[in-house]
Image 1: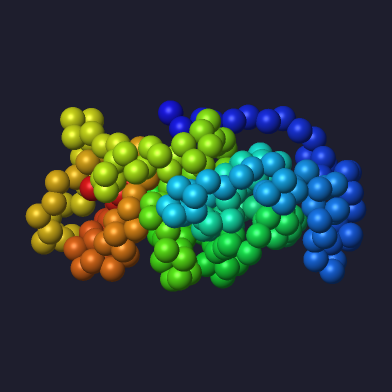
Image 2: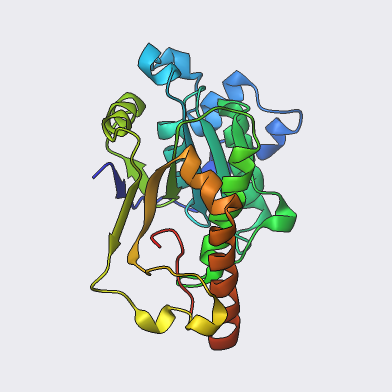
Length: 249
């Protein structure tokens, strides 16, 4: 296990009680970042190893609640050579979005946010839970940063390993993708009937969390078979109300 679910119980007014947000109206300064978020330049507490610099990673993170926990996660996984895309659920408040963006700006300019007009109201087991991932996939592919692997996370998780240890583990995959899936325990009632697609594919069920190569992300976005599969899943969910995740398949 590389990441684990983390529960932190802090007062909802924690951040605003520490320091007034008006102090950031002209942009975050180092002193403000440290005082409000305990965010200091990464060079003060972590030395990026050459192996990490040569093997940048991408992260897409879906968040909607527990602002402090989301900021702690971002601080823990942030490295200047990596790329990050954050989707804040449409259910989240404007203050949540604004504060998280301020915290991200304290770290660096390699943290992307899904634009407000593209944010989704994600619901478990529906395509709406997959679409934020696909939006971040596209943003990270178009960001012109040559990352090697993508890891997807939610705001409820926290790393057990350093970025260097992640790089070592991913290199050991020797170009493979890390996608947990099972054939026996599939929910066949979620699988679109043949009338929705002429694709000859075998459906699998698995974890929403993956660690996949850049080529996998490109395939998911641009290959015609992947596009057809996603279209079939969308249409089946629209007609039947039964959603499914596409990544494992």
